[in-house]
Image (cartoon, rainbow, N blue to C red):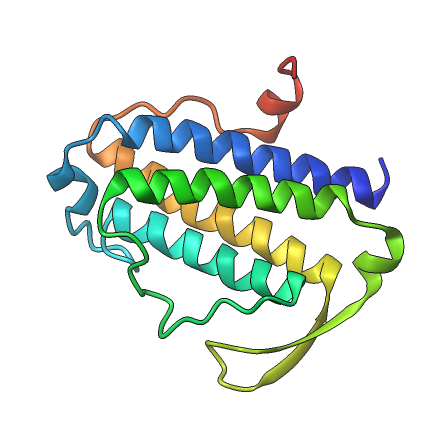
Length: 167
């Protein structure tokens, strides 16, 4: 598998897992979604919002169309339905970006201003995409832990399970 295939596999995996978790979350009450579960972004809704916000920031950097944010816990959508719709569109946007990649684009450097470090940084498109996918996985792990605490089954999350599914 070459790196272009790897990035596409990760984009497809992220979409699959986001669809799976959002489907489970759509069955939660508003109180369950926003219950403070003592995690970094407090609640399932807060964590879903953070993942989307970070993806929009990184996509903006990758496409040259900056997405301005005030903080990494900024609420983009207070209600679940528009959050779910924005997630679905963002996953499509990530897939479209990845499908257009070339080896040269993966190696290209991008300058950006770090929201966390408050300084200018440079990274390759490839490293940024690896970070984007890893970041989603990290926070989805927090969401699955919260869902477990609430008694919800979210199913299998393994990349291998997605790879064995028929497209």
